[in-house]
Amino acid sequence: MERDNGSTQRLVVDPKHPNPSVIREAGAVLRQGGLVAFPTETVYGLGANALDPRAVTGIFRAKGRPGDNPLIVHIEGPEALANYVERIPPAVSKLAERFWPGPLTLVIENRNKFPAVVTGGLETVAVRVPGHPVALALIRAAGVPVAAPSANISGRPSPTTAGHVMDDLAGRIDLVLDGGPSGLGVESTVLDLTGRNPVILRPGGVTRRELEAVLGPVELDPSVDGQAPGGKPRSPGMKYTHYAPRAPLLLFEGCGKESMAARILAEAGRLAGEGRKVGILACEETAQIYAREGYPVVVAGRRSDPESVAAALYESLRRFDRMEVDVILAEGISEDGVGLAVMNRLRRAAGGNIIAGPS
Ligand code: AMP
Ligand code: MG
Image 1 (cartoon, protein in one colour):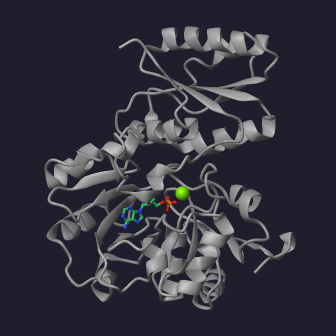
Image 2 (cartoon, helix red, strand yellow):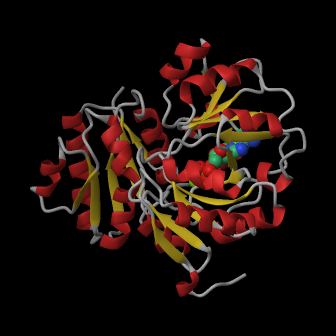
């Protein structure tokens, strides 16, 4: 169903103590088959009733999302899993106790409880319990599990504010709950528990080290950085260019911050010489180096604090769209902790345009 721009309602909601009448209204929209965007502790999600194939199809239509890219099902607590899954692996209970509610998505077997449109036709399903009061209250009010990918047009940077959601989806969805900026700024970690060993399919808010403290050794799927030799990605979403601003992005990685700045300046000079408007994505520590030379710089956190970079990342990428640059040169950061998720998103935004440093 096409909607005009004005027909997406935006309701402000207190992020810590969500207003019950607003949540009731949003829950009813979901139960009736509508689409509701809402804040989570990672990014904004676009929710539909996961048990209603028609409602879920609406998510794919609104986002322009490829039908083989499965959705994450959001539930209100680990107990709810028993309603939908026959055999809950012991690892799920251990992980749920430590990380739920929180930014960890678990891939487990789906015994036909969730429709194929949710799972992309796979025999597995991805589930998580979100750690945001608005998200939890909404799922409870809806009384159904909520399938929700990020609330952006497919391929664009994920939304971390209700404004980002409106920029992409106004007129295409029923309602946006505006609870202010989402917390972490990058998506959940997707962990596959269906094989012999647990495998990270997408790095995210929970780090590999944190998972290993609970589970022992955890593998990183080779497709994570798009470098799997011809193999089929196990997380279908990872094969698409994603998280991308409108201008092409060139990512610089793998060297000390001074030599990185020197190489970025050299490339910026070359491109500017060709008459192109260059924007630079930098951390606080080095931003001045580029600003001094007159380049427009967007500052995304401090490289010494990868969480600050994660929180600023998507807003920074969207800012380049508003600045209308022709090309973006982006500083890489260390892959420690949540830095792995940041670098994964930047590599995908770069779509292979990566300049590796001296090893
Ligand atoms: P999004 O909700 O847009 O942030 O994307 C969800 C991510 O989870 C995508 O990368 C999906 O491919 C992945 N995912 C969802 N369900 C499954 C599943 N059953 N098996 C593997 N990956 C999944
Ligand atoms: Mg997404």
